[in-house]
Length: 236
Image (cartoon, rainbow, N blue to C red):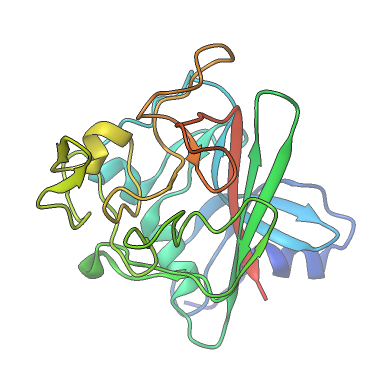
């Protein structure tokens, strides 16, 4: 099938430099699959939004199928879908940058960027790959301490466990599956210090919860659940 749609948000921005951020239909290179994405079109590039969270209306406590195909509304809180991210990032001739934007309940903001971002196929449990870190939030994916590096791990949900715990020991607590305590789905490695798909907590009820929106190299060591998060990626 001849491709007639843009491959990604970067191409949309190149074709229409004055285009506004919003929902677009794309067709990743090397295939005939088409789907909608939210493009964040900024001065530093055209970003595909992978995840957005701003409140607690949309539950992220979901199983493998939902995380595979995506859920939520593209122009509101949502998860794009692991299969779509794989289709976009699998092409070897393209390199991608992942950006994670974080907002706390006190008016602060921070970000983390990783080059060489991609995720594997479902056969690898959508294994995460990130390269060099830069930013202001700290490298929570590789962890606040040794032994919890999430880079290179597959995705886990409440019905699909790939977190490496058999069990993991935290003080006097034995953890068998991180998705049950941390919530939602993530690339858990001995649970780790990054986890953005747990339960959303409002101000005043946002500290101390195991399940939350955590980036513990920025807000920690006590579990701090963030006010809002956004994950997005673009071609380098």
